[in-house]
Image (tube, rainbow, N blue to C red; front, side, top):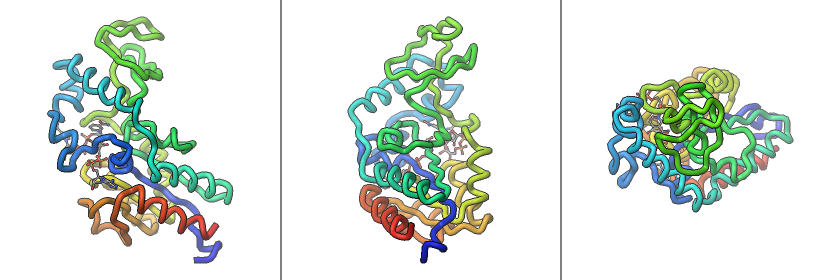
Length: 241
Ligand code: NAD
Ligand code: APR
């Protein structure tokens, strides 16, 4: 592939698997989060309404975990690739289902968190979204409108609309390469991005520990740990720039 054939636009989707080697649990692996905690009590609006303190506590624990987790080689490789592609005038869009901030810590500049962000909280009274690195209780005051007890994690729960969908769909329609990293391909709309990319004529690549539930939709795949396969792939792309 000569420079002229280097991808004009790349869209990368990441899931929990890209952060697994940074010590953050995935959801559906053998010891995944949803094998230990009741998803319907912790990741649905109904669960939050039933027992807000239980949900706040779950996300407080995950927020505290972030304080001791570092980006791994996969996060770093994606940040380097973004910089190299931008310098070469090529489009690069990083969409993540993850709510951690390891892509940003590794240096990624533009991350579309379609499931929200653990380090942000939202006021249900005024809608303000503010950075919140510490514990959140159901009695926390909103720093903007002073409402008490209406702050919730700025995380998209089952049954809620993911974020940035318009922008994501535009980038998928323009990409000539779509790469899915560390996701089981279980949950829509993220699991359907590979089909949107194919419809737009893009080549598709899966980088995962093992074949995901959407594996058959991909033109190519490289299986292994993200910290191995992602830097290898990113270097292959950068060779052509
Ligand atoms: P969805 O309906 O596509 O979810 C499909 C899968 O999610 C189901 O196969 C099941 O595995 C699980 N699921 C969904 N609702 C469930 C329920 N009530 N009980 C048990 N399992 C359930 O997802 P959605 O409802 O359209 O959610 C919207 C978006 O919110 C999705 O993209 C989802 O990934 C996201 N989300 C984010 C978090 C988070 O912690 N960031 C948690 C949950 C959902
Ligand atoms: N390297 C690469 N891939 C890995 C690694 C690793 N070290 N460890 C695990 N994986 C892969 C697993 O093989 C699996 O396919 O990562 C994937 C993790 O899948 P899930 O646990 O289902 O996580 P994810 O796909 O991100 O879940 C999607 O569901 O609950 C919702 O909103 C939540 O964003 C989450 C969404």
